Image (cartoon, rainbow over all chains, first blue to last red; front, top):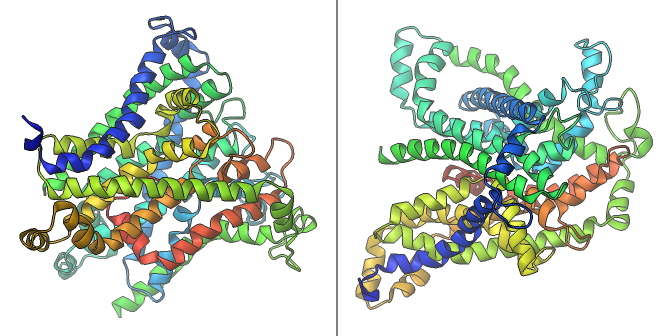
Length: 286
Length: 275
């Protein structure tokens, strides 16, 4: 193949592909190399992996990561689907409500984190005040310092942050549902719940599958909220995998061990990315 | 009749939804205008009385926030612009030509868009350090291309595909070159796409935390998100200042959003998947 035979398309994409290769492929290969060498660059085999896996905190971190990801995704989906269905109904001020609902998603992550940290404040936080007033709790809770409440609190923040994304996607999905479907079941005497259960959710299924995978990937990358609010504490109770990588590298300066963690993390996340791409490709074909 | 009942039935959940979505944002805003004595009270004071600009004064005159603001602007604009230049060519190539390896390349771009930042921070730090680009604008602008470039390519490809090929063919017959067609015919037609991509890239970089935390460690180079996190130390946090700084940081995003809302949502639908 001579140069002249190469499609012009290749020349158009070449600069970008080279840049992305430099920014993504090279670092990833380099991570792999770092993970099997020691601080002096000598080959270390699986030692970094062994140390990383057998560390006493590993089990807790894995548990936390699963807890955070599953909790976040479940509540993001629940809230988002609910909001999407609601906003698809006709009511006065609908477009205003639609744009107000996007606020959490538009607010910068760090701002969301700080605002919620203030709302969760043990002594002066508005959440403790409201909950004690209403009688849900009898005395203020140290949401972010109590080992048992820190994760639920962080999950609440993450759910709040991302549910508008789900809502918008659900809304778009619902708008493509033909009106005849609703009419058909209404003739059969179906109520609103039947409509949700038998029409909306089945029609939304493909959208929900790909959103769930995306939300999982994002939750797995959720450093900003947790790191800025708790730094992984108290006593590692909110430490998740990506934060551990950061801490290992930039607080303990153990780059090789951090690289080993990165490799493990990447292997895990690539499974989800592959799943997502398969779903995505299948949908493109339709 | 049925519709009316339904409206009543959904007004309560709609009201709750609005409160959930908006309350934290409003609480941040009112807290920013409260003096210390009103921030730390039980029961909490709902509205500042009277509102004070004290917190904003502290943020503007006694912290590094203004500097961080400018850093964030430079880096976000730089990375957004650079990504746009590369992405216009790449997206056009993907949208208009069929060639071997096209779908593999496109898949690679999508992977780039999905890749979690934590997987590449360690080697990127080492590379930037080696090149002497830690704590430089160039360094941050480059690493932020990981966020902005795949996103821009992916979104713009969709916009370019939306242009009828006949328009371009006609121009080619009239003797225009491929590049001429891109810049004179197609690019003006995807202006909405360019705007959407610019907004998304800007917001993504403006909000980014982890790269900034790792690659901008000197006071002169930090960005707004890091500045915000710095206010809060384990034992002592000036919550009034934090809320004021949050307000300042959210302002540009809120303005963009208010003015460009339709495009913002449109852009989201067309496959923006990083944030």
